[in-house]
Image 1 (cartoon, rainbow, N blue to C red):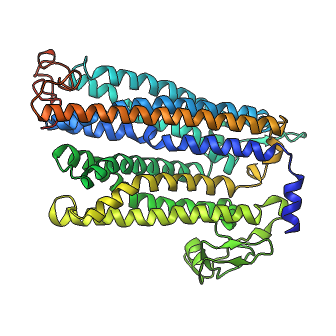
Image 2: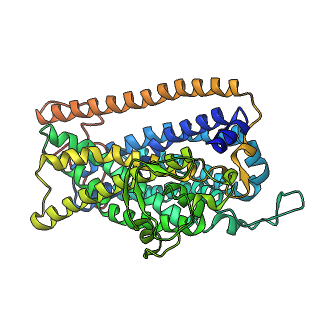
Image 3: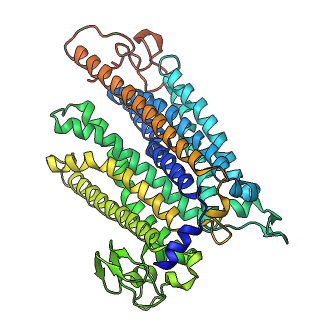
Length: 489
């Protein structure tokens, strides 16, 4: 306990508010990231189905999803830009010393943001002005642009976890930078694919959850069935893949960042035949209270054998490892993520088994309750993944090369607390505006659907087909038949 208190009291006063500000903005931005990365792909899959089968309902869903995609992207640009400024404002020691080594990742992300913005604008414009096939082809680069943005930020973060591609001069500053090695670090591959698949399944469950709620409220028409089936199927296929990738990245952490692994599994002393604790709290004397203890399981999971040696937190001095509180936070975040992932695997298996046996959707209301909860639960799992990654790396901002306390700004702590308060207020307004816009879109779409179902005239753009008035697009150009209705069939 004395050691933990000493570490806290020796930290700069501005460290806590700087970390709280960064944590809040990052946690807020992550809420939007799954839709930003994966919704373009989900939308294009639905778009392709509409063209391939001359399906006006699928085209209508794709067009509406593209509107949501644009709105959330606009907000994501704001929150992402704030994060970019915070790296320089809050952590000048990091960017000043190491920016030349890993900063290219942020540059790639910035270019990807600009590219994605242009592509989204073209895609939205094309619904009412371009030929169907041309419009679809112009949308195809969208998922690649989204993946490029993820590539940039994950390259930077994986370098912070396993830094390489440089040597140090006599003053301890990096030199002889090898950009390729700095980008493709040992943790980049496991971290990137784990993140990308997480974004796909999270976005799929979020979108499908909207239509699952509709099913629970009695809306079982084709519009809701199709709106649920396509994103949920993509998410269900990705879920077991993600479970395997999660196991792979945990094993990579075990080999490349053993002290972080010890924090995530609250292992105090290096040993073999190490038990696994499901939740539980680590104390500063190495004892664990609460939770469920499973003998031998941690060694088995780490190396497929109870004789596998697991490095403990005491393998390094106290100032080079997370505190007991930080280790407990990382451990709980990791366990929550694994628990949610396991529940999603069961939900995906339920869906797949019913589809295999009946060639149709499940009828159980409990299934749709689970599907409605899957989206928010996936977002929680994503948040927990970042918490485990960042808190488990403490006290290092660059693993084994720079501590967080060495990188923090010299700005007065009172100023940082005021900044945090202002950012919270601004973000509440921004996310409130996002919610208001989405609810406005939902209301407009429901009114248009109700009027069309009743045979009443509907105002554009809902009255026309997805590619404009019927006579505007020649029927000979691919699968987008100009005579198809824009509303539900």
